[in-house]
Image 1 (cartoon, rainbow, N blue to C red):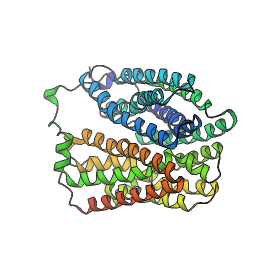
Image 2 (cartoon, rainbow, N blue to C red):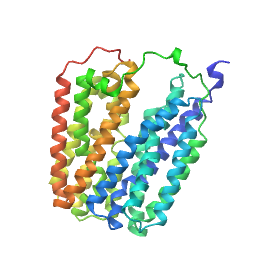
Image 3 (cartoon, rainbow, N blue to C red):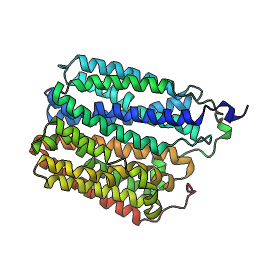
Length: 405
């Protein structure tokens, strides 16, 4: 039987995957965008809220390779079953979190380990569900799906902003549970991949270990260090936006509008990214995203009211909006083909994983020590160091490898 005969229709794969992307980022917004605000509402300190952000990111660092490794060891088990089970367990934890508004630090930590490790970390496997079909020649529109996902994130943020202002922050947990249930349904009904699974004899060269990859590629390693420091300074501008908004006299509704503007500003990147990539290259785009991400911190520090905070958010289009696609292309252009999967994992761990974790710790500590302005100063310093390391990485001669056309 030909592979094409085992494949579902492209139309179904394409639109269903776009719906999955929208569902995931809507669900993500409902729990992560309001994480800090809800924790502060429940009586936790800024340092404890920062710790919970770090816990969520650390759980992703641990669980992502575990889930990916389990999927690799069981190639005949459809990925959607793994994702469905992971998200179902997270749904149970979410119900517990909602029903226990007075839970203490340790129970809250456990909840965020489960949500960060099983719900948020399911995204790479959802990507792989589409990539399996893309590798068989099915042109699923991944970039469009990611752009629609950013729009869904933005819309949910603004809706929840008004919802929390009217019904309270606890009501966002109910919306989150509903969206998780919808996403579980979307994942469970996505067509299972029925193509040929490669045997060990059919596979190409074996990948290096992560340590060997870093040692053998100083340009890539130096860029990772720059991205880590850059994201340490950039992530708190999103995760602790509530502190910035309230320090400028804003409310939960204003937070929703700010999050909407931030998320919506990432959507245009999907339309002009390829043109910028051809003109500047992935390395310079990564540097550009670090520069504008740090500049966002500078502009926020200069604001004196909530309107100023809202006006700064569209800079996201050249900041974090550029980062995700630029980082994917940079890895593909910087490491050998056999190491690209591991390279993408290492990039994710260094950026959103370790960068998000350290950003949470840094933000929580500086907020308790000196408020939002001190946090912004610390973020700017970390971002500037990241920019310098990225610039140094681009000055190193790239290795000669087989590049993606």
